[in-house]
Length: 150
Figure 1 (cartoon, rainbow, N blue to C red):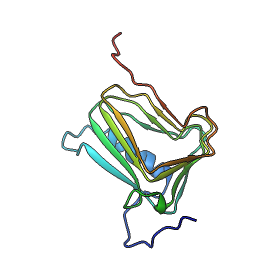
Figure 2 (figure 1 turned 90 degrees about the vertical axis):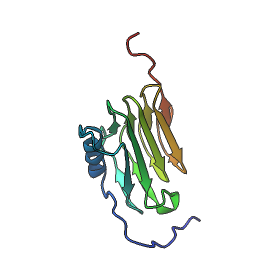
Figure 3 (figure 1 turned 60 degrees about the horizontal axis):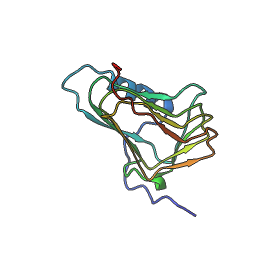
């Protein structure tokens, strides 16, 4: 039996799938050159994020970005953040994009949970994540695009 440690303090976190989707979209489509290249999105502990049938979050940018998605303040499975349902959860595209997902449980996607189709200068990092009850042929599908001009 895994139990969550008691919450030490209140954290600012994103409480719904729609809010996470719009927050990531706003960050990756911000043309402000002063915006930080690294952004942390914190999921609320003990929350199930229901993904609509075609509601995957697209992480894509034409500029260099570093996105971190943490479950709670520690990025830990003990914080019990679950992303559930939908065809897919995340589609990672673009150039020079780094995505790190920590402490998240992925459940019940009907297709591939995570599709990583960004260019060869991009990276996808999982720390302490878990997949369960996904129906696709693969939980994570990686396809690095090489030179787009070929």
